[in-house]
Image 1 (cartoon, rainbow, N blue to C red):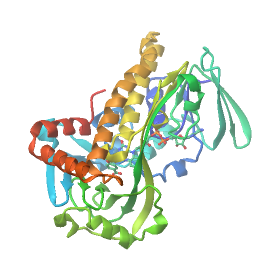
Image 2 (image 1 turned 30 degrees about the horizontal axis):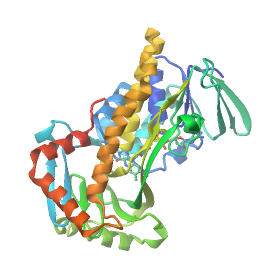
Image 3 (image 1 turned 135 degrees about the vertical axis):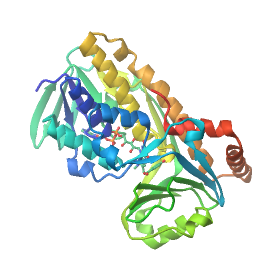
Length: 389
Ligand code: RFL
Ligand code: PHB
């Protein structure tokens, strides 16, 4: 098989890039290790920045999103029973869109199928060859058959545990990592959201987040020990703990019900530099991870896709490679700003196991300052709705 761009990974990064390339007449194949059904069972992000929504629109896959998504013009941040209702309109005149990553991925797969664009599922043993030459290629196994793909460029969109990043020589690869000593226990439930906006809640018992997918489907998270297991939690114990971590006014009206999904995600910050090696370009979680507190993982994957798509379009339509050469540098500038914001949100809102009373007092002061200071609120709003590309 020969394509212009071979995309490894059929998650949101790979699919969005594939769809944008298809629209621009650049032919690509997507190689996915799992099945479509498996990818669609992963419940992850829920908050989309304007940049991502615009890209989906540009890719021609925003019809359902426009009908079914929710517009959020603010967010609540609380500390025990004290809270701040941060109004994005007051500070930045922008909003965020609430629409599940699962639905967004489904829309992208549907569009790919409708366009008869090539996707290979159950792909194993992916190896990248000659990536520093003008004729890179990929070898892999699909249903026991060996497949060879010649291409001009390879997009590594295969997530944190993917193989692409490992093809950057170890002595040329810098990996920056911070592991947090806690995880998030998440529950999805067919209940009415406790509030019309998201609530990011710090409390003496630990952090909690009240989110949603639609007016009848909620997504709640509580900070848990990094070694905790879902086997240690029942629906009742989850709801009780959540109630104990959000302002009393909301705890009193929290609607509970059976969980339809319960899982634990570890929290880490990670960046790989550079994000490009030869004709291999990394996008999304393959190159960086953020703790979910700022809702930035999927959104930062989207900004990478924007930079890479624009650069590839220039290369194929204008025969201009400068944007491709600058890809890593351009993407990393934004990645580090998002890392800083996600780390800051995480540090302000969570309980840390070894935390001294002094550090707790600083967290409280950070919240009090934020609550009283317009400039601090504007900075949070600017980052939360999404930095420009
Ligand atoms: P993905 O989604 O991991 O997709 C990678 C795909 O590559 C496949 N793959 C391979 N395919 C072929 N060959 C191989 N060798 C392969 N190895 C792997 C995998 O099967 C998979 O299908 O990465 P991508 O596309 O870069 O997308 C990144 C996002 O999924 C991620 O950043 C977000 O989900 C993070 N995230 C959030 N981001 C937001 O912007 N807003 C949020 O509100 C938000 N909430 C979250 C989150 C992540 C969470 N978890 C579970 C860590 C909430 C949580 C709890
Ligand atoms: C979610 O709805 O899953 C979600 C929302 C906001 C976050 C993280 C996750 O910061």
